[in-house]
Image 1: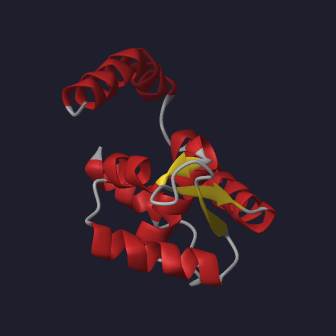
Image 2: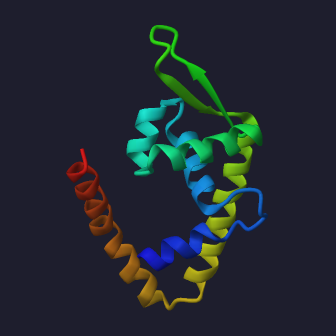
Image 3: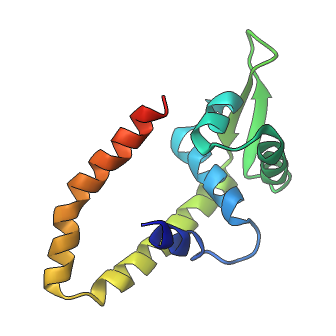
Length: 132
């Protein structure tokens, strides 16, 4: 599963973002707007690395940061339209790559994967709940 995930993360190779930057952008697009602390917890990145990633995403105009109106110590992150569009392109490329690979499998192999999906979802949820 790890190799599959890494391979799919590398499908978008235009060079504008590193794999880590793409994953952080994906989280902000899927869950944003969200707090900086929520993003750090979700991505499991140290503050220094996350700060570097966010600086790049801001400089490329894919993400905006804004302080909380009630508490200036809190930072909210949101994707820009350009960030959403880029993530859509990345997601489409990953989907196309996965569809291509699935097309190379036999019908029996595809059914095996289909039957395994609910179990894999349960694993993901168990791991997420463990980390809460």
